[in-house]
Length: 118
Ligand code: FES
Image 1 (cartoon, rainbow, N blue to C red):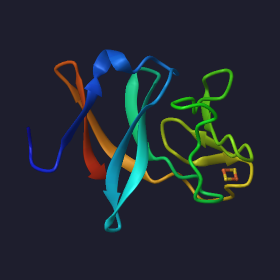
Image 2: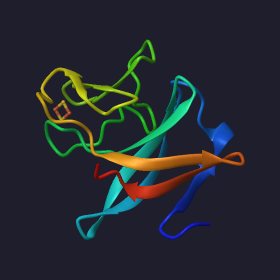
Image 3: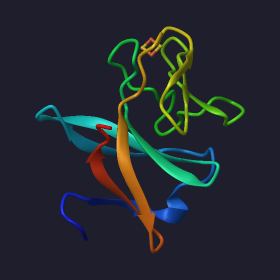
């Protein structure tokens, strides 16, 4: 395992547009909730913190996709985010994206390598 990466789950725990796997990351010196999802075959990870207000997205634990499985949606006021980018697609998030994480999938496992700061 490389420096600074953390095993999150087995690859088969993430189904395309399915339930998120929740975990925690260190963000600005504090533990913060985060999640991993699979979308169009690829794994993506974000802080579980809406760009509108600092609320978790899930409407039920791990349920962060809209009903079509095409975008991430905040259960509080309906902000929509691109599952592959974290960009706000509509609703009260305005121009504020989700905070993306660096995720990697290899050998049937999913790893988080920290905050994606560019
Ligand atoms: S807190 Fe997410 S849309 Fe308002």
